[in-house]
Length: 347
Image (cartoon, rainbow, N blue to C red):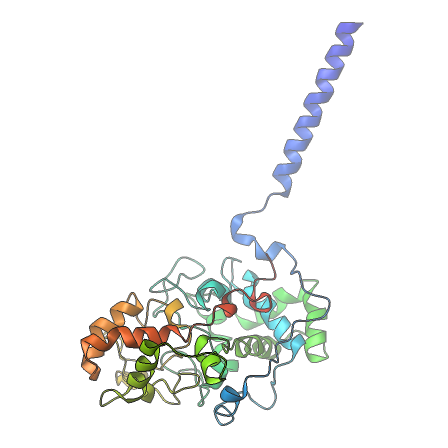
C-alpha cells in the first residue's frame, strides 16, 4: 500500500512540474515583439504637454513656432503620440519604434553613427535629435529638409524600406486590431477611426511637446542663477567671435536657425545634402553635451573633439575653447531625459 501511494505521489509531482514547465514555455514571447504584446500604462488624468514656457523664451519664439493651425498640442493628442512613438507595431516585424533611433536618455538622439532598421540595414544618415523641433521656423524636417513639415516627416520613416518597412494602409489595419488604440484616437480627436492623418498629427503633437527650458542657461536668463566667469566668457565668444559666429547658425534662445547652413563637419562628397550644395539643417544646440556624435554623418565623436578640431576655423583661439565648452554645457536640461510624460509607456 505504501509503495503504491508513493508511486502515485511521485507521478502527481512529475505531472505538476511538467504542467508548470509547459505553462512557462507557452507564455514566453520573442524579444523582438515586446511592445506588440503589451498594453501601455497611462495615467488616469493625462500628463500636461502644454507647458507654458518662461517669458525669456516665449517672447522670442512667437514668430518661429511651426505648429499648424489644425494640429495644436493637446494632452490627449500628445498622449496618443507618445504611445505611437514607442510602439514597435509601427514597423513591419515589430522590432523598431521611433524611440529606437531617438532615445529619451540621449535627449531623443542616438549614439550610433547610422541607425539600424527593422531588418538590420543602416540608415543613410545619423539620427537628428528631436528637441525643440517646433521652433524651426520653416517647419522643414530631416537633415536635407526633404519633408515640408513635421506632420509629413512623421510618416516617412514608417514607410522607409530600411527603417520600418510599413505601408500606411497596412499600419492603419494593424493598429485597428489593437484594442487600446480606438479609445485613444477617440480621446485625441473625437473619433475612434484610425487614419494615417491622425497618426501623423498625434506623433507630431508628442514630438513638438519635447521642449527644453530648464537648463542653467534658462535659469540665468530668468535671473535665478549666474554664470561662472568662464561660462560668461564662453557666451560672449559664442555670440561674437569669428566672421561666422556660432550664433549665426544657432540663434538663442533655442539655439536653432531658420535656414540650412554649410555643415560645421568636414565635407563629405558622398553626401552633399540639400540640392547637393553641401548644406544641411542646423540642429538645436540645447542638450548638445548629451547628443554625441554630431552632424549628419556622426563624424565628430564628442563635444570636446568638435571644439578642438573645428573651432579654430571659425576664428576662435585655441585657448578659448574651454570657455565655449563651459558655456555649451549650461544648455543641458537633464529633466527631459527622465520626465515620465516623455518615457516609454510600455515599460
